[in-house]
Amino acid sequence: MTGTIYTILGVVVFIILISIKQVNQYERGLRFTLGKYSGLMNPGWRLVWPIIQFYKKVDLRVKAVDVPNQEAITKDNISVSVNAVIYYKIREADKAILEVENFFYAISQLAQTTMRNAVGQVDLDELLSARDRVSESIRAIIDKASDPWGIEVINVELKDITLPEEMKRVIGKQAEAEREKRAIIIKAEGEVIAASNMAKAANTLSEARGALHLRTLQSINDVSSDQSNTIIFAVPLEILRAFEGFGKKEEKKE
Image 1 (tube, rainbow, N blue to C red):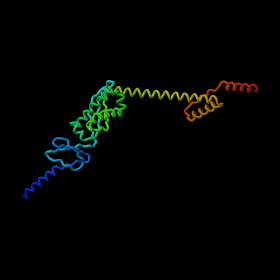
Image 2: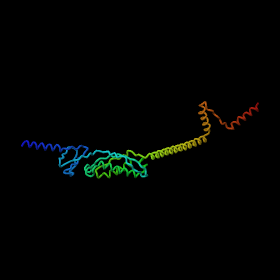
Image 3: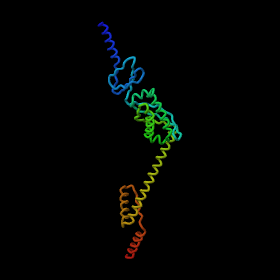
Image 4: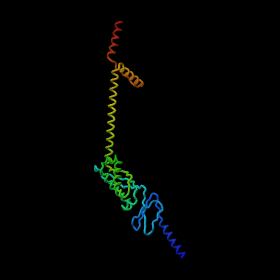
């Protein structure tokens, strides 16, 4: 009789031991009794009776889904290849298991379809220059569609946008033409400023008495610093005539 009691106690202890399940801090467990959902299991040790019950754990940490390259056509009919990464986490563990068969696969497929549709609604220039806005648009659509699954989409990042080779050459030529355009505009603006400053300097020299002569002497001084330079003076005719008259007076005195 005593042996039977010990046997029964041993079986009970064994059943209890194999019924203990551990749920980690970053997880939640779903308990099913006779195939029916019977409650959520919080972190810690929990009892799941064999045969009549089973459980499934759900990881609540942020997950990353790498969306493979997707061929899409922009609004202006240019073919591009786009890939992205999606960051999401499960907010309601019961919905993620009860409402969708495989939430990881479902999110991946939903992201691929949404990304192609979002690219088709923007021009190529907008896709390249406003990548953050396109990413946010994709995130909002996926987040709304996955809300019944208890999933929150945190962020979507477009990693790479690949263009056809001929389109790369066209964009390169366009960028080169834009740089030349800017260089011409900057040069023209510089010439306008230089002409304006020269006009102001000319007005100043013409209005101040003796300023032109001082400027001439300064220029001569700058040129004369190099012995290899040859200086040619342009002497006004009035000065030459003055010297000529002075010479005639000297002849008369003699």
